Image 1 (cartoon, one colour):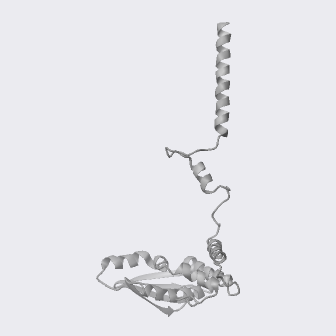
Image 2 (cartoon, one colour; image 1 turned 120 degrees about the horizontal axis):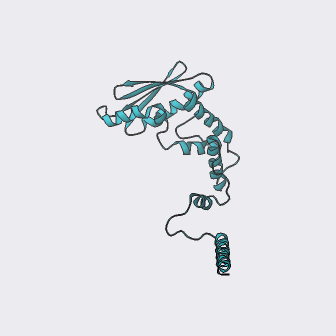
Image 3 (cartoon, one colour; image 1 turned 120 degrees about the vertical axis):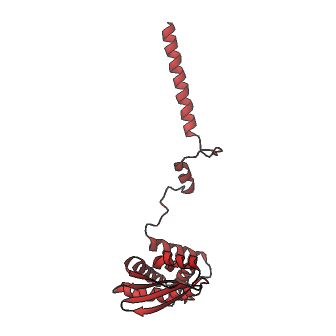
Length: 204
């Protein structure tokens, strides 16, 4: 009898525990004062719908961002909006970044680079690199100039102070890709294109 009573007591205790766990599991999550929230919980808080947030393609995402800005601006003149122009520019960016051939050579105070390609890539190099050299030349730490070569453009970037070894090393370390992303004009340039306005520096 004692043994049966003990077994019954264990069964009852297990039942109580399971019932309590079921109630706890259905309770909404509260604050986590100890900072032990799981990665999944944090993800659900930031993405309550559970839908992916990344656009899946960089040009798609860039155009989507510009469209949201246009739609949020009551002053947008939709009769002038030209998203196809922006799309073509993004194709040019893709050609220059991923398909052009870059031949760098150190020069006193910096670096000279021949950026070349064929077909659409050559067109994109000429359209992007020449005006970007103007932007680089406006920056206080270095000078830049571009000149046409067969199949593309030669761009030379040098420190304004040739004795500034740190800036010289930075120019050479950045190389073509790093120098191409310098400056804060890219975003405003894309928005101006989409609005049908002439960008301040780039004219392609």
